[in-house]
Image (cartoon, rainbow, N blue to C red; front, side, top):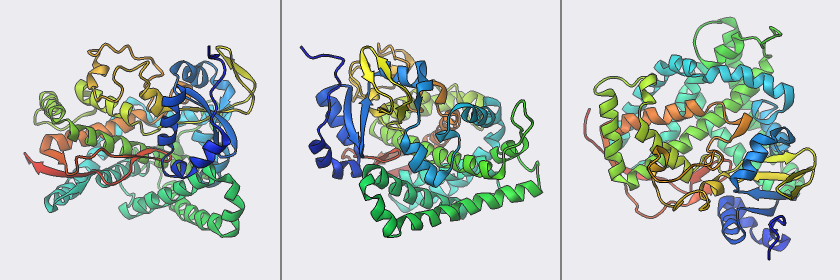
Length: 452
């Protein structure tokens, strides 16, 4: 009889053989072993022995019950810090708590209602260019969602004055740097080669050019304070509670950069997969459209009633279950730990495998089937609180999750109201899992306008 407390381990030879696929899409490798070995297994990630888990009880232990013992791993505190600096996403302790308390003020329901006019202005401008694209023929919805969410997040952070070309430069830089970070994580033994061949220098220059754009905006806002209700203004004008100290320009730069990276890519990925899912289920499209019409009629979308779209939100939640933007996160044990007899030594990296737990058949009936009614209490699934965590879980859950959902619901509502759409290629999209879970190619669709 197999001992439940012994975690199955993938051999070094198997790990090396998996390297090409790991560089292409690690989720494919993780799924292979999850289905073969169960929800929790050991895997050599780079040069480190790592526990990968899709068990919601273990995830709850790591992310919530004993979260003080599990810090962000070396991937965040070394590789990401190298290009992003130390900010909310990769700090710990009192510093992290202080930053989170201040930054979370930018994502309250009241604040999101305040920035809705900016979001709607971005949406209106986007829809003009989107309609032109649909009239020309086939549209890659992922490419379109990159445009929308980049503008939406950028304007929310910096206000109306943020230029589209600057945001596009950011997006290109972020994508290039993330690909490079993945190479350094998966192949750490090549780091001397990366340095000697000038790749480190090349990508640091890309980062510095992006940093300068943010620095220029901070300096300009310092000269003209109080010019907007954007998140940059909130950060610059709000002191830390209890000290009346303000965040330094360097810290503001780091936090804004991290919010831009996380916010843009999360919303883009969630929106892309949601449109893909809807296109595969035209009956779903009709139900969403009916709900939108019943909720808003001919009126402009508003923030309070946006949350009345119960079925539409359930579709989004199910899309993020099947294709979670953050397909994994990482933690590292600070001291020896134990969970249900399972030893977790100090220094062990634990990967909460979000895609895996979202597809864990022990907690989801027919996990590969699209069924938004799971989230309306009509499918018989009693959802474990850590079986659906597209934005993470516990105290470090993503502070921008409400903004991300608002952005996706806005663009969904606008496009579903005005268009029917269908995929031009019926074959199943593959998974390209790097920092986030993206499609492995374009998501081409045909859109047919049904109303102005």
